[in-house]
Amino acid sequence: MTELKFIDWKNKAASVQFRDKAYIDGKFVSARSGAKFVDINPATDEILSEIASCGAEEVDLAVASARRSFKSGVWSRAEPGFRKEVLLRLAGLLRDNLHELAVLESLDTGKLVNDAVNIDVPSSAAIFQWYAEAIDKVYDEVAPAGERNLALVRREPLGVIGAVVAWNFPLDLATWKCAPALAAGNSVVLKPAEQSPLTALRLAELASEAGLPDGVLNVVPGLGETAGQALGRHNDVDCLAFTGSTNVGKLFMGYSGQSNMKPVWLETGGKSPNIIFADCSNLDAAADMAAMGVFFNQGQVCSSNSRLLVQREIKDQLLEKLVQRAAAMQPGDPLDPASKMGAMISAGHTSNVMRFVNEGKRTTRCIAGGEQVKINGRGSFVQPTIFDNVALDNPLAVEEIFGPVLSIIPFDNENEAVRIANDSPYGLAASLWTDSLSRAHRLSRELQVGTVSVNTVDAVSPLTPFGGVKQSGFGRDLSLHALDKYTSLKTVWIKY
Image 1 (cartoon, rainbow, N blue to C red):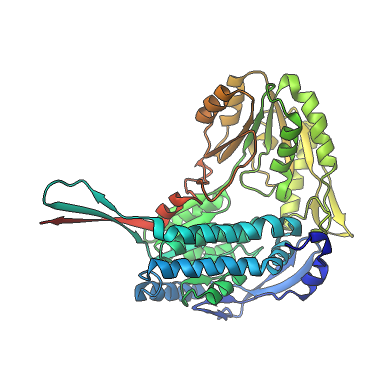
Image 2: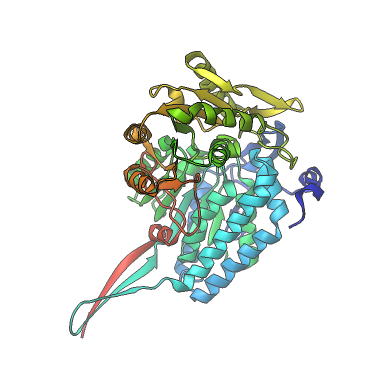
């Protein structure tokens, strides 16, 4: 990969092309109503493009296209080797277009181009490759049915998959849904968040270039209350996979009940604890990862480690290290590889985050950051912010802020730490730092979350499932287990 410092990202940003129409049945099309929404660069407040705003009519067209492609068997019944080859080519095309996709992601969301080019786009390519390589390694089953009986258990694609994804990792989250759904032989209608549609539209175009048949992947940009609701209520969508807020996830469960009872797989909110015990021998590593775990992507991460539970005897020592790290992670121009934090997704979301911060200043002690800033006089940026001794009932410790805001909560012993960590309506992820193997095993069992990261934070890999419990949802992305969402088991019993 070319050294980042030698890449003129601003020049690339000035020349990048924006796809501004829906992608249905292998081609870009306008919304029939002519409706559009404005896509804004949150780092500069400038309009990037006006995007076709899909509604029920376009969703109908996309679902019909997906259904035709599925019934034709051009993808759903294609040889595993063909599907594998196409998805491998798509992974290669994502790598070939690395810089373009990174710029699109940075402009659309305000995230650091450094993160997009080193993390987001390579991760998307790797996941498509991983599921491509799994296609011919997932087998059906033969049950032990007894003499002169053959009981087959077949795994079959569901049909048309609706996927609705959030704005914080647009390309990655689209990949988390689309890669296993396509690998299983389904057709997909993807609705990206209206704040960040650009890489999803480019992904669909690259998929066609890779050889994915027309209609197998359709993208309908639009507002949640129009395109999203239409997809959730659609009677010809066989399954709906969603990443976003808990409140919107509950709406999709309602849409299922109001339509065809499609399964709805939710990955929703979080308020993840990061627990640091006094027996952690490497406080510098713990401080580094604690800062990354809450300030990465401006804190706009569903599994962000936004509650830091620290054993009282090491709290002052750890806080000193965290304040130093926060000071070194100030926001900057997302297209400058030297910047340590980017912009928030929008002015509206920034205002919501600052509402929590300003209220927090009145109720507890802010020891770092706490201000909204501008870069070159523009944009929506928030400093990395730390609050000390946050009460357990303080909104800072309870609600998902989805910003670079860390709440410090002291504890005295292991039982107290577990009680505080589990005292949340969410259960997506948790991290803990300890040199005790026994404690690591004990707490990993007791923490009510989907992923426990020991002596690191927010461990994510295509090898392992990602998802939560409680109001963090119940879907699982990544790993072979994700295929369970997009397939059904059919029993074929033969007596002979």
